[in-house]
Image (cartoon, rainbow, N blue to C red; front, side, top):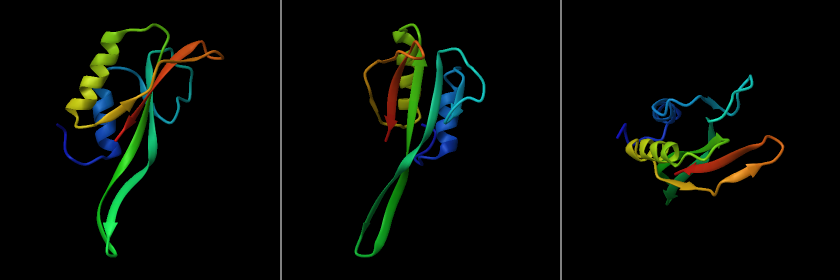
Length: 108
């Protein structure tokens, strides 16, 4: 496990292990799938009695592909788990305009 904090650096470090092209928010130029896009999705905090106990950042990850390759998905998910991320995974969603599939991972 990389460490217990949910930081953007930790997300980047985990995604670099995949070997897939990845960028924050979007790519400036056209990139052929498979590739990853990640972005911040807010923060969860816990407080009571006017005291802030803890908070952690939430990140979303989008995995774009044209050909279903379960081994790549499994490898990505293993990397996320090894890095200490828990996640929720969407179904395969086809984007007709782009002729590509996407799976959304909600890292929490």
